[in-house]
Image (cartoon, rainbow, N blue to C red; front, side, top):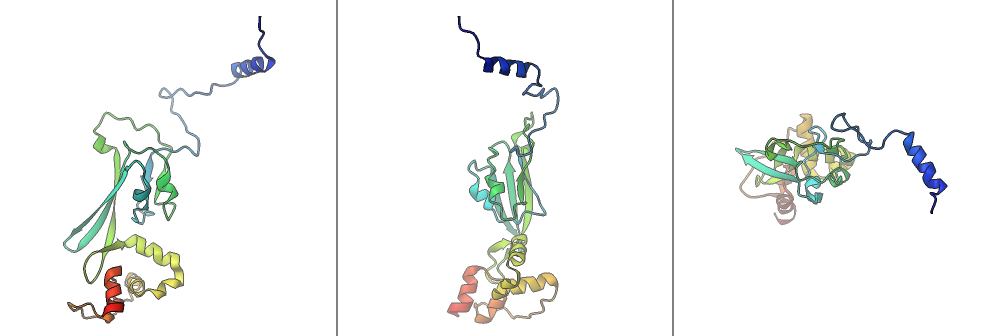
Length: 200
């Protein structure tokens, strides 16, 4: 007859007189560990709308759509929690590290429609002043200016954008149908800025 080892007896006695490893969820609320990866959330004030999180999402739970109506453009970002695998790539690749974060929420079961298992935020887009195509989100440009510091003065588009935000942009320019060299002081997309600087 094989007798149990002392290590096994020690482990059994330790488990007998210690609290259980499991929780009583759903009878009692469960508190996950501090580094638990749960459902992600967008933070409207911190998100810059760069869509880096959308590009790295392996489950394609994140998506965005740009809408331009009557000269006003906006970007709609959406999280689908029912397809999210809580991998944390969105939080890891966020430039601000605060635009999207994983929470400790793990219980997303619902009897409602799957369309309700989502979060949607809107960000203001900036259009090229010449061709009216989408350049970037306004918050993204402001974040870039703050990140570059004084170095942003090397870009004429960023100079004009920063002056308009501060309310000191009084540059008066007469727009024409042709993209001229003087148009480089407008806020332009890369293609139009290249045409105004190198081609015209």
